[in-house]
Length: 393
Picture 1 (cartoon, rainbow, N blue to C red):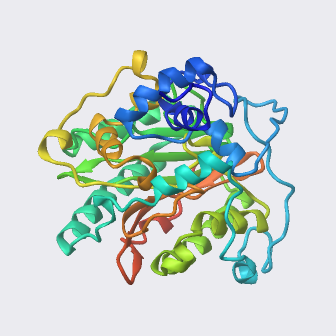
Picture 2: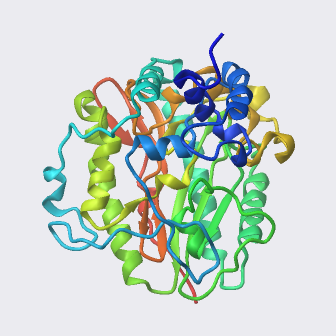
C-alpha cells in the first residue's frame, strides 16, 4: 500500500484537484486527507493536474495585486516590455525564442505527468476529410453565435444574460448540448482569475462603457464539437487592438510549430515566451490544469444529444459546466494526453481547440478555434476568428 505522504500519492491528489473542493488541497504538498480522497478518484478519472502543483512545476510564484474593480484573486500583469517590431507585436522576436525551453519540474510528479501526457490515445489519429468538414460546420455555428451575441450586446447586459442569449441562439438552431456551457466574461473577469475561468454564476458582472468581453461557446453539431472564444470591446480601445494584433500574428505562426514534431514538443513554452517578450502574461493560471488547449471529439448519438449536466453539488463547479460526454471521453483517455499544458510530451496530431489567453493590463484577450494537425501539416479550419466587432458604447 502506498503511504498517503509519498510523492506518488501527493501527485495523484494534485491530478484530481479539479474534482475535489479547492479547500481540500491548500498547497503543493497535498494533505493526507486530500490524498486519500484523490487516490480512488484518480483511478476512475484518469488524472488531472491541480493548479497549485502546476504553479510550482512552471516555476511561477504570482502575487495577487490590489484591484479596485469587480473581481479578486487576479494576478497582475508583467512589466510591459517591447517586442521587436513594436509593443504588442511579434516582429522579429519569434525567431529569438529558443525551441528547447521547458518548464522546471518537481522531480517525481513532473516525470510521472510527462510520461502520462506522452501516451498516444485514439485522439491522436489525424481526422478524415469528412470529419474535418464536420468540425468545420460546428466551428462555423460557434462563431456565428459568438459574433451575433457581440453585435447584439450593449452596455447594461449582464454576463448571465449574455450566456443565456448564446444558449438560446444555439438551441434555436438545433443544438442539444455542448462541450461546456456558454461563457461570457466581462471586464476584470477577462483576466481569468486563478483557477476560476468558467461561466458566471447568476447575473455576474454588468457590461460598461470601455469594457472588454470574452465570449466562449462550444456547441456539438451532428456529433462534432466546435469550441471557440471571441474577444470584443465596448467602443474603441487602442490596447485591445494591440492585443488582437499580437494574437493574430501568433495565430499565423502556430500551424508551422505544430506541423514539425521537433517544435511541437515545446510549443507551450514557446508561446509563453512570445507573450512575455511582447509584455503580456500568459493567463493559463486561470485554467484548472494550466492548459492552453485541448483535444476535441466527435460524439456518438447518445452523448451528442444528452442535454443534462452534473449538479455542482456534489460534483464541483468544474464538472457542473462540462458535458458528461466530454468528461467521460477525456477521462477514458487519461486526461493529460488530451490537454496542451507545459508538461505535454505526446504527439500533437489530431484536432485541437487552441486558446492562447493573455493578460494585458486591466483586461484579458484570447482567441480559441480548432487546429487540425496531421502527420505532416497543420491548419486552421477557417479565418472567421479574424473578424473584428466593436460593441456600440
